[in-house]
Length: 359
Image (cartoon, rainbow, N blue to C red; front, side, top):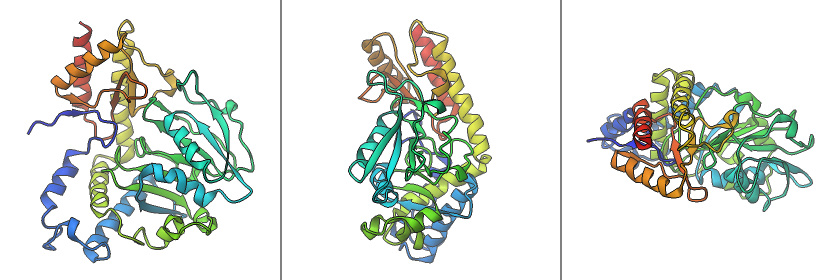
């Protein structure tokens, strides 16, 4: 079987070794005579997989002991509502830093729950060419929390240095760049991420939350949406996405075997550097709309001189075995999503095609 060069933004590429492990274990997990898809989430066989996944998250991210690791459902979009439902108490407001489409969606959902302030925005004529500078932030020292989106999948921008928010809990949607590099978890009150870009398949949402925020969270919301409910039950209060967590375990094991997040960072920076160089070296045809110090290492976006050429580029790339390069429907252009599982060979294929297309 010939695997394509997969640049999809999510669900995205998974490491081949993680898929092959799932293939070999699909009918019989650890000699149990059953697939992981058939196991009870309360049985010992699945419990071992679940706990290994939690342990790998803690190890790879160096999660401090005073944080809970949760595997939830509903994606990051559900967390847009669940975060303020839990952490935005009556009489308080929360600060949102608006850096792109996903930050705006998070803010929009939070407004349905409580009082929200926009602490900064980099929107210009409907686009977001960069991340804000520290001195541009208008932060409320009494805010319940400050929310950021660490990487904007659509616009191709990324926080390379996280903002200083003082003693206010910093909340980050890291759906599209979780584990691309080592991260100091202690700087955050809560991190959440849909798994379907860097961690595993769709259907699992990772939440890493400081225990004091779990304990002080609101109790006047449905029990199923309270972080304390899942924290108390090791994310097994109700039936989780068992196969999704199993496959996440496989992906994290591969990442650990390749040297952990330091190795991921080195590889990711190299991949992104190669593509950005290919764009910048041909400014008469390719142009990246993002300022250089805000460019994403996960989602490289660029334009050609006309929409017609962009369509031709996407069609030609597909014929050459590259998929997922069409930009998001809201902005157009080209987007190469080069998450952890994106292979260097795929990037080399893209760069070669870019040169041939220029000719």
